[in-house]
Image (cartoon, rainbow, N blue to C red):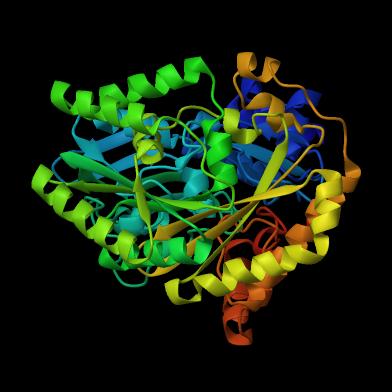
Length: 528
C-alpha cells in the first residue's frame, strides 16, 4: 500500500492525494448509494497526471473510479471494492481553447456546465445543449460519461450528441484521442467521424472504458431572441401528447412537464429567492421594454402552485429574430390548445432560463428530505405505456408509502424530436449522506433539520426503484446515468453483448476501470 501511495504522490504531488476519513467517506457515497471507501482520493490537475495515477493503480491491481461533480444517484462511482482509488476530476477545470470562427471549444473534463456557459456568454457563443439543472457542480466529463441532458435538449439532444472528440486515459496509462484530434498530423477538430465513430464508443460508459480528461464540443451563435410559454392540463396523458407534438414540430429548445407536487416544491421559496429570481429575469430580458414586459409577466404569474392532480407543460423557444420566435410560439400555442391545454403565465421557464445553474441546494428537498430519480427514454408513441405502467406499479405500495412518508414526483421532457424522457423521483425522510452535507450552501443547510435514519422508508424506496428499473427494461426503455443501477450488458442480444465484452477486454483487460458499471464484472455497491 505504501508503494501505491508513494507512486500516486509522485504522479500528481502529495497535496493532491488524500487519505483522510472525510475525503474517503465523500468519495464512497453519491446521493443515494454508498460503496466501499477507496484507498485514496487523487485530484490530478492535467491529463498526464490522470494517466500516471491510473497506471500507478492498475499496475498494482487497484481499481480506478472516476468522479466528476459527484451528483450521481445510480452508484456511478460507489465502488464495490476498497482496493480502488477515486479520481477526483474537479482539478481538471481549465477551458483550453475557444474557436470563435470554427465554432468549437476544448475543455478539461472537470469544467462545469456553468463555468463553460459563462466563459462563452460574452463572446456571443453557446453550446447547443448547454447544461443540466445541476450545472453549477456537474462537469463536462461526467455529463459525457453519464448522459447529461436538459437545457437545449428538445432541439439538440444530449451532451454526447454535441461532442466532436475526446481525450481518454486508458487502463494502461495511454492517453487516447478520438475525432480529428486523433490524427497524427495536427488538424482542427471540427468533425467527429473520420471512419468509425470512436468518440461515440466512449460516450455514456461511466468510466468503464477509460477516464475522460478532455472534450471538444461544438458551439452555436447564441440565439438573438428567446420566448416562453406554459400550459396547464388536467392529466398527464394530455400533457404528454402536447409535449410530443411540440417535439415533433421542432419548435423549441426546452419542453418539459412538471406535476403539481414539483411545482409546489419549486414555488415554496423565500422572499430572498423570489427577489433573486426577479432580478435574474430582468437581467436576461435584454432591453428596458422587454425587461418591463418580463417583470409584468412574472408579477401576473407569481409563484403560485397548481391544483393537485394537474400537470403543466413549459416551453422555451429561441431564434434569430422576434418574428421567428413569435411564429414558433404561435405553433406551440396551437398544438398545446389542441390537446386541451390552458395557457398560463410562463413563470417557470422564464425563471429557469434567467437563473441558470443557481446552485446545488436542490440535492435535498426544502424540508430536508432526500430524493433519488430514475429515468426512461422511449419513442413518443410509447410514452403513455411508461408512465401508466409506473402508476400501476405504485398501487400495491400506496399504504406503505403513506406510512413511511415516501412520495413521488414526475418530470417529463423532450429529447430531440424522437425521444420522450420520463423521470420519476422518490422522496423520503432519512439521514443524509456525506454529499448532502457537502454540496449545498452552508447557510441554506443550516436552516434545515436532518431527519432521523429511516431504514424502513429506505428499504421501501429500494423496492420501488427495483420494480421501476424492471418495468423500464420490460418496456424496452433506455436510460441515462446508467451507473450500477440499470441493466446494460445483460439487456443486449448475445452478439452485441459479446462485442461489448471484447471492447472492454481490449481497453481494460484486468477489469479495473470502474468495476461494476454497465454490468461489467462486479456486484452493485451496497445501499445505505
